[in-house]
Length: 274
Ligand code: PXL
Image (cartoon, rainbow, N blue to C red; front, side, top):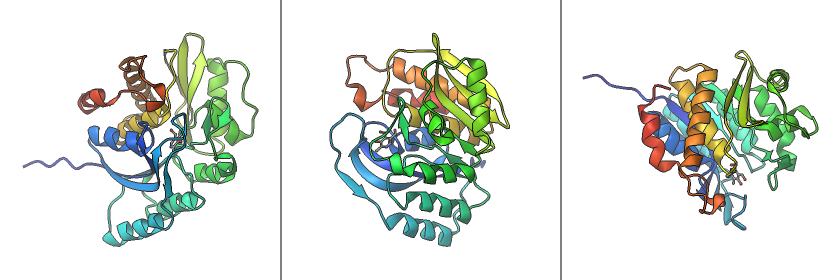
């Protein structure tokens, strides 16, 4: 009998019931890629905050630290810690503590702060803490807006060419050894750029539709692919490809705030080498 051991990923995100983002993207994607997501919700929301009205909200408060302590006492092996949207005041401390408890884990921080040149609702005061978290991570995955916020740069008014994109990803490497900046428009393409240990630019034809949660989908596929032993550039390419396919699979007449229809495509992730 040959056993296939899954990699274990501690996912520290909010759980938004509807809207296909954060934990709602991370858990199915990682599981489809053969990994075990350990879901540590920091807050419960009926939906994300991006265009579906005022969500019902419940911060998880002391639950997170208690859950971490329990996992430590159980002696769980954690191969990767993957954090995303952190809305609560104690949430950044929670991720820091997880990094301390499992120093050998691959630490991936998606510094969720905003998009389209602006902060998400209520995230303005989270910037210094998120920046600190990035310093403790192995890989960070900001979008263009977040990259500029982290660096204290003005939001660019023009597209960045390949060299500009690479330079931005490289500048961020002062914060973290491996950076991947996503959502970089380049003419007919959308690019992401790696800086630090692996430098690269990956491009896909741009699809002129935008949906909340695609950043979380991208990050989750990238995490899953890294844990399968892929190079960061290959993982980023796979993630960009999956997001493009998921957008193409979404009826343009559907409410975009409900996110992309990725579920029917999850089997493709299972089958892929990346
Ligand atoms: O996709 C990022 C995200 C995650 N979680 C919540 C959000 C957002 C973006 O708006 O509101 C609750």
